[in-house]
Amino acid sequence: MIDSYKRSRKIWESLNNTDRLLVSPRGNYVDSDKILYRKVLTVNNEDVGFVDIYKHMPFSNSGFVLIAVKDNHRGKGYAETLLKDAINDSKELNIKKLIYRCEKTNLPSIELAKKCGFTPTKVVSINYCEFCYNL
Image (cartoon, rainbow, N blue to C red; front, top):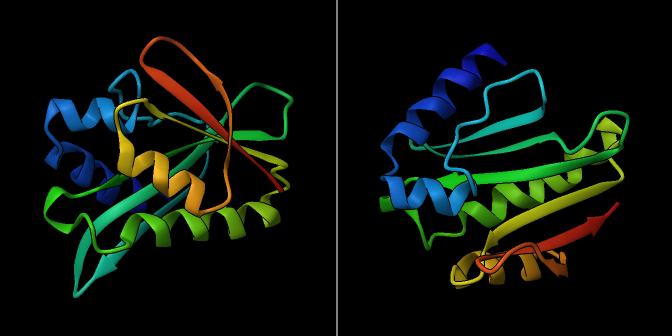
């Protein structure tokens, strides 16, 4: 996990502040003990994106999904690959529900969630919506 932490941190640092807010509503990089799963996608010896699942609440079997792909690698299907891998790997981690939040204006992210089988659950705030995937 330490190696993937360093690699995903570099990807995170390559994002501009606006993109960081699109990836994580608070714009924060999650680097705590709440991380249940982290995967970095490498293409042609370059780390292009990562996905995290972190604990939603103590004693729950649910996790929040956070995905980031470098700007110059977007539109190539890497986020979909990462999200599908996270869904499949979640089953082994005894996670029963994945939660995916994004800005209501982030249409590519909304389409990604729907394409991967997430269903809309609620509007979290004026700016954010939430999707759920039950495993």
